[in-house]
Image (spheres, rainbow, N blue to C red):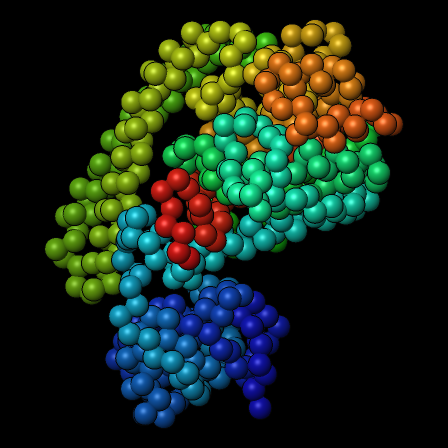
Length: 502
């Protein structure tokens, strides 16, 4: 009698007979043995099908199964350290549910454009499987963190008429013959609940209609946003830091195998469990102008040029080995290696070209400007952990941010920059709690007061010091996974050029 189970539970059933149902991830016939890789959603398992231990009809049927065919197998579980998960199954019986033919995403290397055209199928790949599981763990860590601190989850509206950020990036829509927009942030509505419940957070989709095509941007993304009454600025910084520590700890503990699949350097994540450095905006400007930054960029330039030389040598070796490969899987492996290495070289070439430009921008950066993507990348490259930049100039930040009592030119805000070039993952501030000062800022921005009257009422009736921040989920997941583009971190990414089906 077999035990129905899942792949991630197989270690509990060593030397027992089990049944698994799933999809064919890969299949390699070799004489009287078939090596079949089964995927069931929880993991991957190598299944050994021997002609002598199964019916001839089943063996022949299994031999011609296409990728993504579905079946149920029965067999004995045994330890095998060389296999994924440390176990494998010796198959004694199989039942085919659906035979798939001509699956479009073959094991060979495909370009990004092709994969995102077939996104509905691309999600089944091992890489996307690993990313999705890490994303789930990041979300779970965030919710657990705030729930354990007795925060109350509040669902903020997705349809609004107020701009939490730049009004130029609102997604406008017709709401029963009235003007409205998709929400840029849940923060403003969340402030209402903070003045009722004290500690609250929302977690949902947000929208920005900026026509940015960088690897860091999506037009639809998810944010977690806590808002806290009576909090101080140092406490706000600590709240964000401890949340990121929780995310990293949970991902390292629960998703080690998935990080390995993605080739993620776990030691780099472990270093981020240290306290985060904190720089004022003015200190960040001084750093951009420093000789230390120039020396670091020149070192990066030399290292990247050396890496390109090494990768070019690897390509030449792979090309020389290709004609001698006898098996098709060996040819495919070498072809994929050549393509992946070529892509690495192309990316490094762009980075090499950009370094002198980034250095010139850093040297000429003027106090009062907002930090750009290249500035953030340079600053974060100076540290092994995330780094806080705080107290930006008031004129480049949102109208609701509280000016620093000790320097009215700047506001009590903070951005948390992830290392390794992943950019801002947290943005937050103390909020302006004075009615008249907030009204003045709304007028300065040229916003219509009637759209913000309810927001002003919060300062009119029982105002208190309060603050909060937003963490972008997709950028955080990209950083955890060590992948270069946020579009891989969400099942169906929305960009300016996205096909909306599905």
